[in-house]
Amino acid sequence: MSIKTASSKKESVIEAVAEIKSSLNDSGTKTVVFFASSKYDPVSISSKMAAAFPGADVIGCSTSGEIISGAMLKGSVVAMAFGADIVEDARVEVVDRLKDGINTAKAVEAFEKHYGKKLSDMDHKKYLGFVLVDGLTCAEENLMDDIGNKTNVFFVGGSAGDDLKFKATHVYANGKAYNDSAVLALIKVRNGFDIIKTQSFHVMNKELVATKVNEATREVMEFNNEPAALAYAKALGVTVKDLPGHFMHNPLGLMVDDEPFVRSPQAVVGNSIKFYCSIREGMELSLLESMNIVEETAKDIEEKLAEIEHVACMVNFNCILRTLELENKGQCQKYADLFKTVPTIGFSTYGEQYVGHINQTATIAVFK
Image (tube, rainbow, N blue to C red; front, side, top):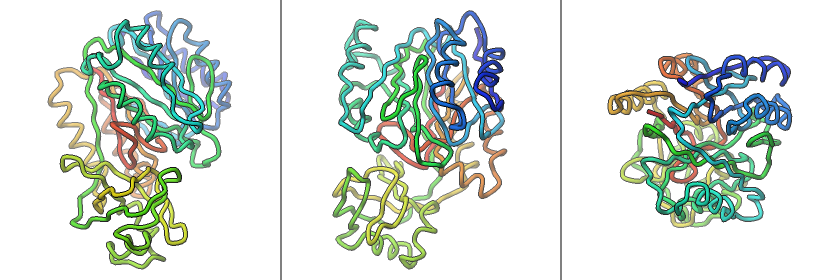
């Protein structure tokens, strides 16, 4: 079967799933990935999506906005069906109780038993991991570190959202809904894949060194041995009072091979700054300045697609902060149009996973 995508804005779970099923239903469906607004009851949407596609692995999560080829949506469900011509094999595992500490041992054991080889021995060109995480756990960094210590396979994904309510986010696997958990899918890809990591920032010639932090709460108390809020404001040439208004336009970036891995500030708390992503003590960060998301994303997509002879589909994990900026600038349709010629689904995330946990980025899995 060829890749199929579908969306529904029906109010009830039963009607929404029925519409998705009628569009995607195919005897060759091997894996279904779906992203659903938090308006849908989590237990119901997961169980009914799994029931709609018996014999297929069905995974997904709650969102803060959905993406499908040519459209950015809200209050909907989007889904993609993969056949055996794209997904040769897949195994889905759940890592639960993330707040109690990361323990992927059972998931790793299950992956290795299923594929008959050590995770550390798997060819990173043939296997791809999807990771969907409860977006309110603050556990993504430790989870990605743990996975990275066990394998060279790329795990790409996003943190579940709840339409900016910040009350409860959910991940879904084979008919069940989970909090405080991550869904991991290890996929053997038949024809190969690639990953686009795109962020739209210019690197300014100013650095802040985190000299006092609380990693557990993602809070920086000091930059450059000064109160964090004061040092950040001074670097931007603004007052501490005005600082929060610059957060979206001027986040920080951990530079790796001249490429920023974005850490976005969330709020000023006293003299400290709370971030959406953990910052470690001693970390050197560059001040960033936002550019045009549509233009930068278009350039990165065009460069990648020029390297690939055929693209079957894309799955886009797009930061909610990018979505908010697109909304503020009236660019949502222009962004959606970047994906209208390739079957695509995605969602607005509470953070993105790619070689760690990052912000204000789109991580896009590209299947050949």
